[in-house]
Image 1: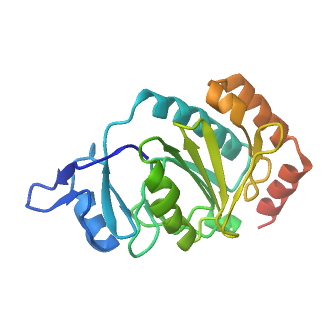
Image 2 (image 1 turned 135 degrees about the vertical axis):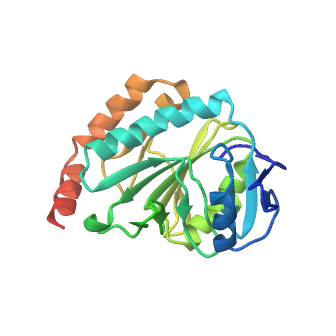
Length: 228
């Protein structure tokens, strides 16, 4: 998520969204859907947040992690990767996470796609790129994700140069292995090389992912998804 600013978006008919507004998801979605396509806002814990423009470091890390998510989904039938898509998470929560991976409904996933093409319910894995939004991503947003059923949560904290990894079902933070690799639980075979991530080493990050995709755990996961 980007830096939160006191910006606002208007629909042209007197309705608007501004940081700090309190509203239900239904009200938020109605107004948000009528704003200009370039406008971004999220509803977190019933409070509206309007982000400011994204900086270079956000885009660089977002692209690399997103490439890993996309490559994983391409090799794992029944898994979908998404980027900056609105998620209808709960009665007071409508975030627009930087990245998500979800199991599709036909593969046993807990979310579904609405008739008007939104994700309804919690993706199994969500990732955010955090700088000055760190407090929101690690607290209010993490609380919403846990409350509404996201299984695992990654936060790339740019200021610290650290990938924070949370098992939201168990309510605990996990640590990368001694080799600096985060091996996700809900998506077996998705290995994120934290050293390569912060070095901007796309080749190294993809090589680590390939090792994860070659594991028996990933093969078994694909078999289970296919069996559904």
